Image (cartoon, rainbow, N blue to C red; front, side, top):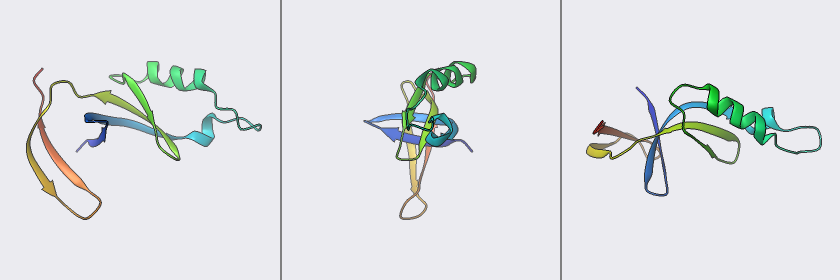
Amino acid sequence: MKQFYKHNDKYYFIHRSIAISLFTDKEGIVDLEGVKIWRDGLPMVDHVLRNETHFLFVETIQDAEIVEEVQESEDTVSLEIEDSH
């Protein structure tokens, strides 16, 4: 089952999550060129999101329709999504 992520009313498939620290040099500068290389090298990844600790390499879900939403726990929601592609 794929992981989904919602950000600003858009849904994404998470293909890879990589710690920000792996892209940060000794001075604390983030190597955004390295992030772009990863984004472009991963199949179906069209966008990168960032949380407090990780870069999320994601695929945008276009024209998704939620057909069922199931509350699994307090922190987790599973979505069954029909892709209109």
